[in-house]
Length: 195
Image 1 (tube, rainbow, N blue to C red):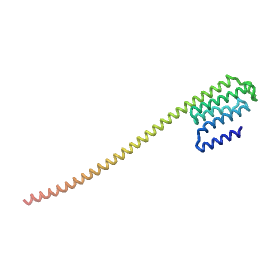
Image 2 (cartoon, helix red, strand yellow):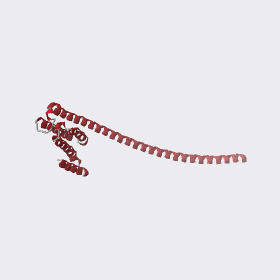
Image 3 (cartoon, rainbow, N blue to C red):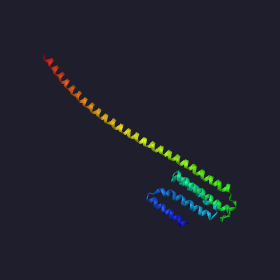
Image 4 (cartoon, one colour):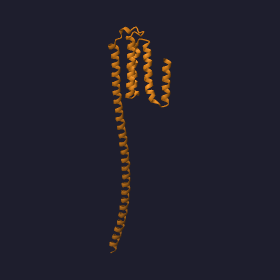
């Protein structure tokens, strides 16, 4: 079983390296569920510490998968937990704790906890995705506003440069006119002294 799980995980790695993530999103959690279920079935079944991996698998699935695949993963996890409980209730397991297994106390509550956890995680992931989309939209708006400010600054600098050039030209014209007027005034003064 361990060799089969390792082979499937290796195939999943190859698929990731090829960029084919769709199949990997389903294969990895399913392999984990099967591995944990088989391992627990030969140990202490529903009372084995390894069943704590089921919520971890659901957490990973919530981040890796979409809503539909998360539902499939959660359903498989609940079925695996139920199978371990049924093995205990039917007396088919070798667990020394099998006589303490109850449908309501162990199986039903465990299944409810898994489903509620998956639902809460799905809601949290959806909220995270929504927040991320808002942040990305805000970032895009900020980048657009910054670009507009840069454009306005460039336009303003160009207008200031044009106005400065225009004023410099006007200053030269005024200076030329002033010089011309001074010469004319000097000529008139010389003319008045001669007369």
